[in-house]
Length: 463
Ligand code: UDP
Image 1: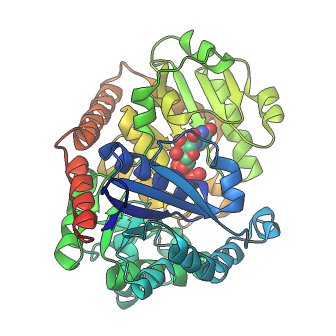
Image 2: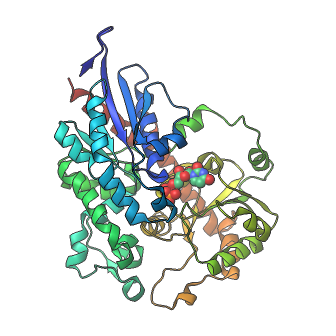
Image 3: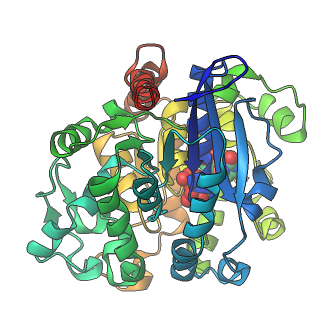
């Protein structure tokens, strides 16, 4: 434990290393703020390490005094990002940042007590092991997806690898410990032929945690995936701490919106639970013909909507009608918690899903790829708090997967119906999950206790 000479205060110095992508940086920053809120005195210092490029985006965001930033050089060619070259991007992160990070860790003062790293930064555990610094992996997806990767060999042994969704998507997978039953079509798409380029890294990420990290932190909530966590805890020698939902709920409770911008004014003027919030995610999601049906279906449903659309928002504004707003970005968690919002159409990113649970909203799921498939399954089949919009791509020709505007309008109406028996029951379950989630982060709840235990571990480790 480092001792500041002047006042003899021991400082636990945590280095946080997120993967350079929004869906990974956000939960890491939220964890930093949660840890910071537990130790507002000067016994904890957190240095969050991001690339210079990301520092430009987030460096000036408000943060507590005991969180600071340090940067790594911009070693990821921006043309890879522009070209949406995901495998190229992953490779650059894996090969170009390890040495600068290790040099940074050596230079930092006070000496580093623990590294909290995204497992996708696969070299972080190596650096920690070489420098004799404990590493906590923060898994930013559902625990169930961690388990899929960890039990990857079982898919092979059962003849389910690579996944053949179109021919065998209905087949059941019931041999992954802690996961119950799932269909092939609901497994992460990385296991199919398209995803193979990045599969090795995912497997490496997960096995790096199991073999070399000292802690596994999860952005999930124990009660949301209890069986999976129990299995992982029984199997792993290292402590497994679900600390979620790692979403910006602290900001929400601290600062009520004072900003009377157009969006807040508009939300304030809508009837309770009347607005469908639509966000289809950061990546291009559906085909043009499917998008046309979605736009017409939402318009024809007659419901009010708030649509977050990056890129070609003006075209969307022209075609979607006048019952709603189209905006390029919003403070999503705050919006989801606004009284006027009655539903959430989501691409099923994990952070968005945790935010929906926190806000007590059912979800219209529109998964496209990656972990969005199992997350949609969790929402619709396990938690029973949503309906799926797009069909699973099983067995039929491409055009037969298209969901028509009539089907979409009808589904939106059914989903937004607050009075039907089915709608009431679904909303009741969403409220129960919300209570569970709020209970986990309240004092003495499962996530709160896990954060305390983790802080205690890393502080003690350096006495
Ligand atoms: N988000 C936001 N405003 C928007 C759209 C998204 O604040 O207009 C946030 C959202 O609240 C979530 C994150 O961006 O925390 C997206 O993460 P997620 O895992 O849901 O999806 P990804 O974009 O990583 O697929």
